[in-house]
Structure formats: structure tokens, C-alpha cells
Image 1: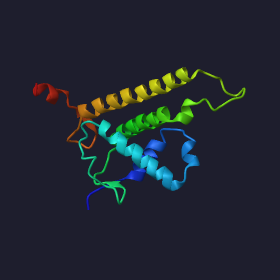
Image 2 (image 1 turned 60 degrees about the vertical axis):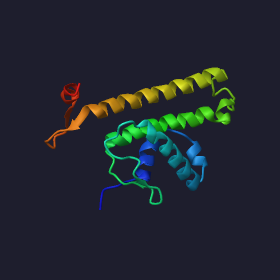
Image 3 (image 1 turned 30 degrees about the horizontal axis):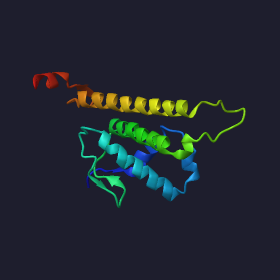
Image 4 (image 1 turned 90 degrees about the vertical axis):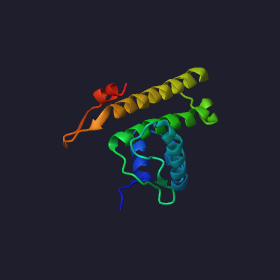
Length: 156
């Protein structure tokens, strides 16, 4: 049987990269549904994966390919982009609902600007990771990767 990657592995990888109490407030079913929605929205950002990341089994919640750590990391970056997009679109986060001396107030515009700046940072990081991913090729040895720069230059 071919190797697969469970959606849960992708979700766990994503959740390890963020902190959000929202997921603690949701039911497990709602959490899984939201994570799947975020993941599916993030996948098209991965422009040129070496594996068919759209070959998946929704019923069994798995990709029909084994994803590498590098591929999981790229997907996580874009899941974070989508997650921040949810934060930007949420009316609850646009309203400043916190008060008291423990919180420093900023204007709503500043708050949104910081969220958009953070989102742009993750978009840029995802793009950078994809460039690195495309420049590497598996070496013949089991020792790791080598640059594909010369191969790229020969085709031009």
C-alpha cells in the first residue's frame, strides 16, 4: 500500500506553530471542521509541489502521498496565512473586546495593520520556503540534498 499522510498530522504541525485559545473553546468536531477548511484553503498557495497534494481521501482524512517535513512546513505557513485571514475577517477581532490595565489599547486600524503585516510576513516566508524547496533536489546519496541551480540554468 502506498504511503499516506493523515490530515491530523498536518493539523498537528499547524497547531504547533500557533497559539489560539479559540480552538480550546470549540468542540472537537468544530475544530476538525475548521482545521480542514483552513488546510484546504491553504493548499493552492503551494504552487509547484513535487507530489500531488490534491490527491486526497476526504472520507479517510488523508493525503494519498507521504508528505516530507519540508512540504508540511510550507503547508503550515499557508495555513497560518489562512488562519490570520480568519482573524482579519472576524468581526469579534475587529471589535476591541479587551479592557483593563492589563491590556495596552491600540486603535482598531493599528490592530488590523499589525494583523495584515503578520499575514504578509507568513506569505513571504511561505514563498521563501517554496523557492528553497524548488532549488533542492535529492542527492543520489542518502546524505541529503544538493542544489538544482545548474540544472535550472541549463534549461534557459
